[in-house]
Length: 138
Image (cartoon, one colour):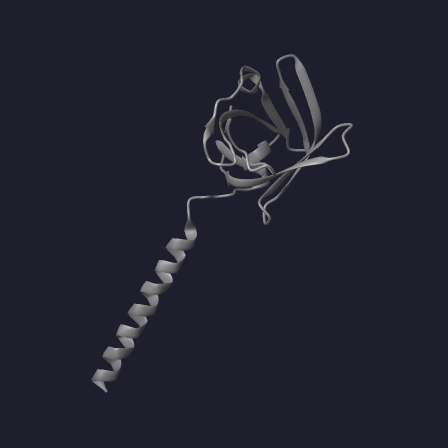
């Protein structure tokens, strides 16, 4: 009887350790937060910090790209400005699909991005062409 209790205890310990290993390995550091992290309570401004091409090589941001800011409003509108130009439209975020969609005003096609990471201060987007953009909240 004592031997059976010892084996059961070992089995439970092993199962617990395996469960913890699975939970830790699935946790990853690619967190995708909520829609509110994009817009804040009313609006939030983001600026591009880094760009990687589809091969993963760093690409230098142009002067215009460095000057651009993107402001997301909690009502689903956005404004992209810099260098004397302004583009507006609407945005939506599907948290389960990790997808950010931008619909530019006067344009029939929407731009869709996979969201690799979304926190209060950082957003990493991947375009359909494979280009990655890292944005920082201002």
